[in-house]
Each structure stands twice: as C-alpha cells, then as structure tokens.
Length: 78
Image: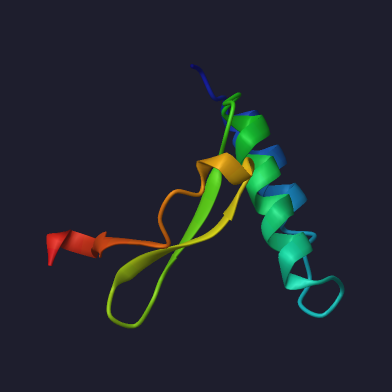
C-alpha cells in the first residue's frame, strides 16, 4: 500500500471542513472513518478514542460486524 503526500493532504483538507455544531457527532465520526477507509484503500476502518484512564474505546467503525469489543487494554500496556 502506498499513500502519497497528496493523498494525505487531500484527506486532511476534507476533514478540515468538519465544524463543531454543523453536523451530528455521529455523522462527523462516520466521515472520519470513511476518509480513513478511502485514503488507505482498506476494507474496513475505525475510530478509537482514549478516555481519561487511557483505555481505548471503539467510537465508530465502517462495518458493524467489526465492532467486537467496547474497550481494549490501556494505552502503553498499563
């Protein structure tokens, strides 16, 4: 897989158009996942966020069947 600087710049420009309050949070997360899906030419992509305890949480996935667990181990293996 090869990702060019142009591809990354284009994706970041697209994501830069997202504005707080202009769309539902769910729609914005979907856009982030779809952009990741497209730029890396993958069959599935997801967005994970870290909580205050450094646990990763699944926030959005491109395929519902990809959502297998709600949390994973803390970042840094803590």
